[in-house]
Image (cartoon, rainbow, N blue to C red):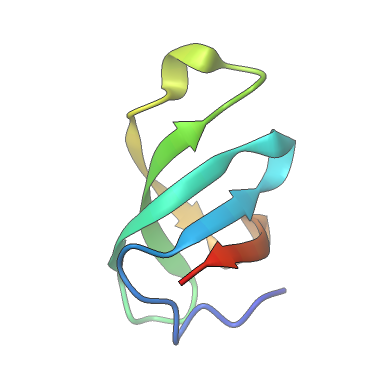
Length: 64
């Protein structure tokens, strides 16, 4: 699991299911990030949605 405590707003992440998302807010609890979906291959309608993302769903930090 990736340590999300240092992830800043604007960071792009690779999530499960091939989702690419941008951090909108870090909840500073070490577990939750609010993200906006940029790419969602399995569910294209989710692009643009803002949701909470748990640290365990973060596979890779793409850019900071």
